[in-house]
Image 1: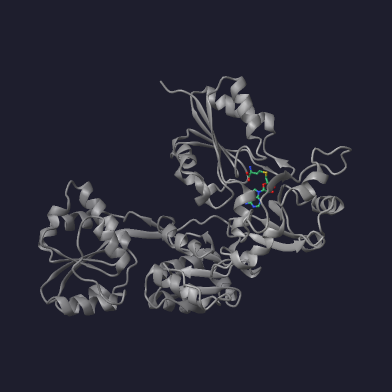
Image 2: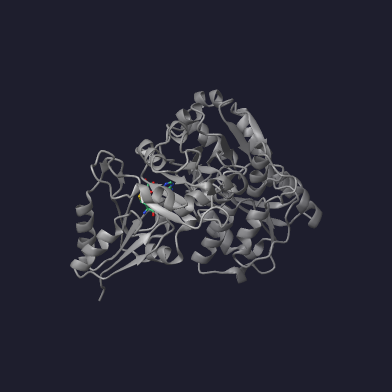
Length: 518
Ligand code: SAH
């Protein structure tokens, strides 16, 4: 028998890494996920594939559902014997109406648990270089709603007491009321020179921080829109020394990743580590080949080959998955030597518990031929190359010229991707995108087709193009794109390093240790 359960979970302030372990578990086991505007939707990726997702965000005046309707919805779903995870931004009990939702659950005898989250008043200033308490500056910290209607006759905020009675003040939902808030604080005795920080979208790559004083912040933050938190107090001064997040080398850069959805995350994660905002724009998808017969025949005669040569991780997965589907396993490969074009392909092979016998120093087909020549007599050796439908003919042709017997077969197909329509060209022209990355020739060709070949040369000058290796660069340049960032090592970490080197380094203290690059 299933039984109903509701988890009211704090999803944290924006950076998906800032949810608690318990909160993440609640997402994984939910049948129904009911989530708010401030919840980072990346967190939903760990949910069960058949989970139901219900967005109930309230953004400014635009509410998808009123609070009473949200309460009813949570109760209704729980009554269907489901595990309901109600995800709220920050902490559920800090200006999140979590208390109201929990009371409704109690009234309806629905069992519930509440999982705390990291609230915006702690996390956003942290990511802006501001510790909310520090022994030299303050011993008190207050969380205040900035949402109160300033025309109300009586206020539930005792301005006289908080203005001078609390060191650090954090105002939630206070952007519209900033003139009222600063005026009240100064009127009740807080110095006009008190430092103030306004932080928008804290802990995310879009974070924006404006610094001023009680006297100047209204003017300085006039373009800041919600969601933003306002921090008032002497601790704001520490930002000059402790601003660790906004000084990351790629902070403020928006980078487009064009590789397939399955392969994007490793690359995107490395860019995010360095502070970049990543837009996934998958221009390719990996699909099964038109016919599997040639691969099946090769696998059924696998012992007739001397070498298995892999030139991509997709080829590795396609080959081994089929091997297993045919009821075989790696014992059928005994004695056969294995070559990988580069480290990512080698890692892919190792996952199937196979050691690579040959890997060239440069990760291109030309170098594969040279390395094979070095380690084996190619003449009369039998090579199996499970590759993409669009793979270059250079490798099989060269091996054949040297007397090798080559079976070059299509193990997988690269087809056109279906990226979300995000008006990329407009964004590029508006200067909102800084770098577009290409990790294979097919990403370049498909990008050009999606954007429109006639449009693409016009993008030069508006955005930088980054390429993983010489063949990809050549394809891009043939299509009229000026590639300004080129990886020295033809791998994803190599491309990340080239991007890091290309961005002008922020002011660095020569005594600072350099952070790891991968
Ligand atoms: N329960 C949430 C707060 C909800 S009220 C929490 O504990 O954080 C919504 C307000 O929270 C916003 O108007 C803004 O003032 C603040 N807020 C939430 N996330 C924020 C973020 N990432 N950056 C800045 N302010 C944020």
